[in-house]
Figure (tube, rainbow, N blue to C red):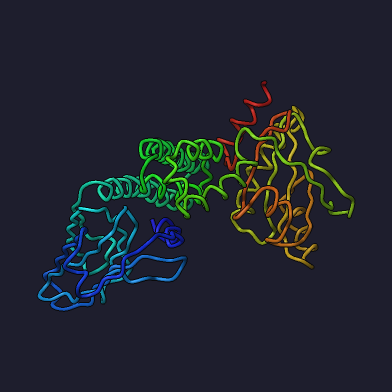
Length: 376
């Protein structure tokens, strides 16, 4: 969940600054307890851009504090206690009372009792936490399988791992739809919009259109929607943008000219260890299905002046398919401007019409999708 809370720092919302007189006029209160702490500074903050703004501050005494705010609409805030790592995100809502049983080891482990939007928010966080726990268990199984397991066992674990991403996104899409008229739905939309596990951006664009006017106008939601619109161009169901780039021998090659009945665009680099680890499996699939119409075009994000490393990796890994590279590292225009690639390996699987039918499939899942498309 760390990523979610980093993304939420971009929220721009109105705040009320607390002072001695205003503290008596709270319409939101937060009561906290931690018997193991005798005294601590407690702050309730929000963010304007990336700058923290204090709403209220108090001193915790004898393991108890009450802090609050006077607001006219729901907003995201963070509870900060000196001596305890991190901040605790909370949804403040007029008329609400939130109780926090602090965990002095890490504030994110604190127990929170509340109603309304804050309860919705924590229900969502708890559900996502369960998805992550499942993936963490599978990650440990995969590490063990790398030492003693078979390739079939490793592939099975990977498939289960990625299917959890699908289940998580399905849950989030439903959650957003059910909360299209409130701040929590907007915050979850923002989190999913920047999820590295590649959600369905066309689906997210439609969900944005269903938001209430108030949610649409939230600055963080508007910003997330711009990211969604940009990435929808390379979402599943969209026509893959054409491009041209130099091949190893210096000639220009376009995606259009490299197309087969099924085409895989593979963003990778010689320096990328996960990419190199996947290459043997991609080679097996290519050798098995190339004669049936499978083509692959590798787009390398190798660094300027590192052409020799790129060519050596192609030879060493036996990558006998099309290759292009501008040798511009993360500034590669194909990756950055057309396909919005933020990490590698990243793959796009195209049908005979150049429509993106799947993304970032590995091993058995990649082979199954290629077989499916070849049969169409």
